[in-house]
Image 1 (cartoon, rainbow, N blue to C red):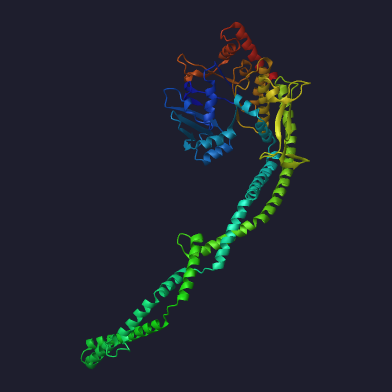
Image 2 (image 1 turned 45 degrees about the vertical axis):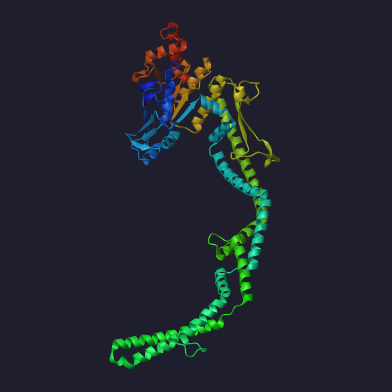
Length: 577
């Protein structure tokens, strides 16, 4: 892995190898940047504050050797990456402005792909992970992860029923709490529907009535106009001598008919006069009929105006933007449907209540199934962790799991108790530790010292390594608060874990570093930066000097060197592996 312009690191190459690699160095030398670099390569958050002062960006590049058939390789190739002789090249760039870019196998990819690949590549554990594991929710998650499908399968069914129960309960609560509002809405709808039903409006009726009212309101003027027009066309019986259009037209037609045989053009005009005569006669007849039919009827006019007033009121209350009766009729149809829905809410409340009861019963059964699977896994998990603690200089320590439930009157009934429930079940999970015989098991947050807590967490991770293995484990000073024999046992246990996986440990304990197959030291130059040569692999002589420094604070102390050599010899002894 190559690191450039990250934190105090100017340009450095970190050579990780199979087995156990220890990373040491003085405080502030940049050991944490090794952890940070791996985190960035595997999708960690890009913090612009990590970019070294004076640089515009930080770059981390890594080469990952993948076994044949690796799902990580398949996923990377699917994303467009190319493998380099079975290895995958990954790079991450973070600019000082906060922008981040990722490349996998020469192809630009979303940072999310790095996170996805990282889940199958490496498990990173540090002191913050220890603190998180002190939380009951994290402990429950750790137990479920260890249990695998025995918990995951019933828990998935439980969560589906839990989701349905929440939906049904929310709908039921809304229906019951809004009963008064729904009743008021129903009353308004009934009133409106009764009003519309009483009027029985017909689409287009308002336009027809408007036209009729206009005609009735001007009946006298219309009748007079029709009579005068008829007299002008067909003659006035009261004045036989008066000329009319019909008489004049007849004279013109006779004049043309007398000479039409002399000119075809004139004959055509005579034919057109004949057509005009027929049309004039029809219009005159229609005018006579119109005048005879038209009657000023005050009673009918009043009825029309009353009906128009009723329809106008409906339009004001229930009409739409077009102010048409069709909109009133459409409103009535929608209102009837909504009223049927509101009237059916009582039946729906009963149905939902019955469904809620059934779902609660189903949820209780599944919760019991999840609890039983957790209980069985808890026994195995606790036994495995206790066995690991025996290897970590805590031979009499015992780890147990406490699975409890909290009473809640609004919960679900299980085995005669009404208990609280949530998306993860009904169990409150807590890890208990009895560090020595006769001690009462207590929550690890209260019953373990700093050194004991580190060993408990390491034991948990080693157990996880067997249940959910990944190729690489990174431990960032998980040995804090530990010393002496316990530190030696932690080193031995990490070395054993390294027999089946790649293990990288950032540590300040020489007892742990002595067990490493490869020892890297991070050194700062005088100007406070770490250059390429500042992260180097130590040979045997250099390891003695570094361990001596870690033991006594003096690299060339004879006593310190002797102790360092003894520590290395003990770590290399076959019986210790």
